[in-house]
Amino acid sequence: MVEFKNDTNLLDQHFLIDQKVVDLFIDCCDLKKEDKVLEIGAGKGILSKIIKNKVESLTIIEKDERLKKYLLDYKVIYSDVLKEDINGYNKIITSLPYSITEPFMYKLIDVQFDKLIMICGKNFADSINEDNKLSLLTNLYFNVEKIMDIEPKSFEPQPRVMSSLIVLKQKDINTLTKTDKILRLLYKYRYMKIKNALKEILIKLDNITQRDARNIITKYNIDNTILEKMFDELSNEEVKMLKNAIKTCKI
Image 1 (cartoon, rainbow, N blue to C red):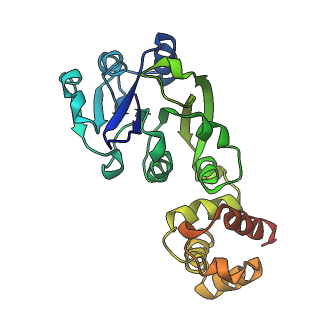
Image 2: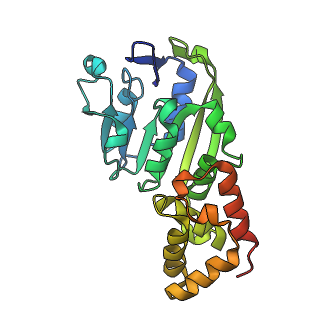
């Protein structure tokens, strides 16, 4: 199920009706009897009814209470997923509103899971390898596999945009370069000024003193206007400059 906001500010639902896409989606889930699955945005339950009997447990988060009559046989939390704790599940499946893809990706950095199977906007799927703040976050935290593009005719009613099916698995921070570890943690400290966030990160990663951390930050030669901003305030271009400054400094 895909959601968009319509002009009356109600949820305008686009339900998946293509059985080939449904089958491939389920194949990607690789469901096991011991799985604890969270489904975000169940729609009329087309995936739910397949999943329920294959796993240990299925919990649904669905924002649109108009769909209650389709979901009577399931454990459902009627709420906004961005407001809910979604830890405690080893597999997450979703086709949430494309307009909240970015805040959802930020939410995922604090969630532990084995695999996330997601229908998203094709624009997001295609931009993962681009050089912007959202794609950097995605690549620092997750291995992403694009499975297929999905035509609008696979939904009823048809959305105006192409969709994609992707699979995310979490990356082990220990496999990352020093630069990537720093950048990854900056997303965690995104509401601190860069100069303070970098200090905390360097102390944590290298087990050094505050003075040593400040000396390293000076050697990065980062523009002071960037150092005085919170990471969350940086533009894509400023993030690129910050990344290059840290990467090119031989420390």
